[in-house]
Image (cartoon, rainbow, N blue to C red):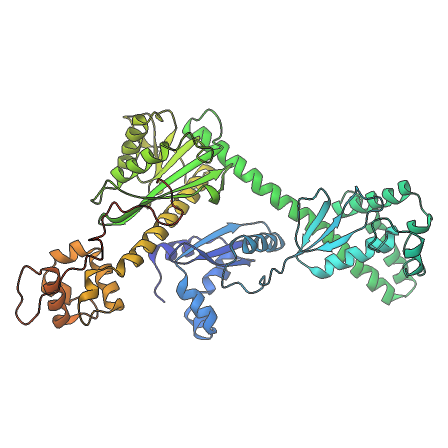
Length: 522
């Protein structure tokens, strides 16, 4: 199968350890999230000829759509399952089936502020002041834990906020001696809440005496040759132990994510010589083909995490040629013009997609608008080198490939590139409908796309000879001649009637066309 060199290199670098992998399409969108016991073995399996030969159409379609790959190495497969679930809920990849229809892991909830707290099962966690346990990848474990807590600690299952004698008349839990019956005053509020607190400590893993009691009961049953009861107690103990471990794992995985971001920002501050870790980082990139339909993007990270509500797009207005440094400078000047607006908070660090040339142009533009004190660096593709240093003495900084700081910069650079490229492609698709090529008989959308992909713009196509145009896939000599004639109406071509250039109802579309959609830099 034909895959890009970038993707091939990522496949070669896959580690042999558990983790989560994400596939992206050509627009940079996440189309599939999966987990693996071994990232190296699992991900490479998608691209094997034997796998694709026996794969269903959906899998083949997925593999054909993959343009890039990201991984998150983790310590265990259960940890990968938790992270996988969260990423699927965040990105909603179209090829994922297992978590469709908002299916989520089960959680246990208890509100200790209630007069008579009780444990309930939920699939969506809310910030409501209650205490939450989980999520539990195994629904059997979650339901077993709930049933055990209610029975062992004598907790109520009824739904009234304050149960009374009328509720007791219809309750079966007291009849079978599971409930401590607070509804009829059999237990005081203080004693009941003490039981709930004990149950919470058990779920947190702070009190494991219950598991010890279960193990003792299992041994006694085995010694009494009651093997059926011993097996049931063994299975119950394993399920409860797993519930404790899964809750601890879920809490640790949220904590590790925050700690990893904090550590990476501290590393970034140290390597760039910043006074403190940057709380707000802005990253910029530009996208164009030969200077046509030039656009720029600004993505923002707050505390090391992308903040999509602050992303902005720019339509380049003043640069008509393929000059990325000047485009970057224009974008930064326009960005700084919004510095007094609440939603445009001044960043602690600016990151550019590019090298020394882009960095120097950007710093000059920032000096012009009074932002010269904002730390600015550039991250070049291919070698992943970070450029910085004092003004006029820009150089490659010492940021190793495995440094946490580089992971933050790469995340933002790739996100800015994706955001800019997506905007450029949308504009290019729109411009296709306004192309002079539409006026040429025999040139449909497919041939028009092929011509524009090959030459990059109408201007470059106009510079080509008839023979060069004819060599484009699907065009040929006859259509090549027709295209050439349409692009050169002032030059009569034998056998081809001149085709008027399309200008639309208000003349040709200019390069300084305004922003589209909700883009910024107006």
